Amino acid sequence: IGYAGISECRNLTDLTLPEGLVSIGAMAFYANDSLTALALPASVRTIGARAFSNCDKLQRMEIPEGVTEIGEHTFSWCENLTEVILPDSITSIANEAFLSCFKLESIDIPDSLTVISDSTFSQCCSLKEVTVPNGVTSIGYSAFYNCTALTSVSLPMTLEAIGDQAFGLCT
Image (cartoon, rainbow, N blue to C red; front, side, top):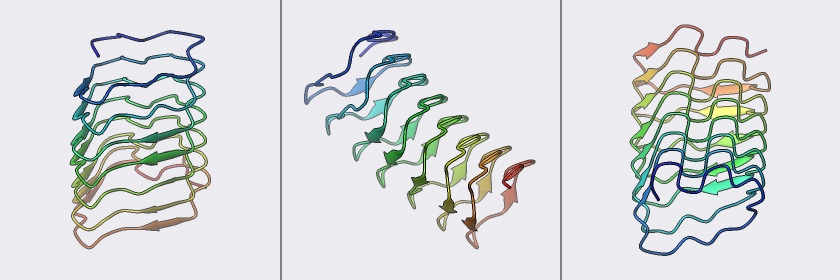
């Protein structure tokens, strides 16, 4: 799916993607206000920046095994997203990938990740607990900033750096 290929389809509630689809381009589904769920075929390997950004009603997303990177702002401002399932193949989650996913309650960070980028989970106000897996060496600036429901954080022995405000305003 190319750049902004299916973006701003305000009334699209259901979409079936074909097996064999390999790439979801930048802003592919940007601001599809009515989309509540989308099953990605197992053949998907890349997901571009802002691919699902501003999909206000999106509630759940399972990323297929084989995807290695989540781009910048991929799910930012998906205000009703409560669940994301990340595969063990993920090695990179870019800046602000889940910014302002206000209803995201939990996230299982895969062991394959080594860096949590800047503002990755910033303003995920419903996130209650986070276990950063062994292998992560760095948590970026504002990575979990303003996660006001956060009550439990487990950090690994492999952690070498925590950026400014990484857990700022976590009351």
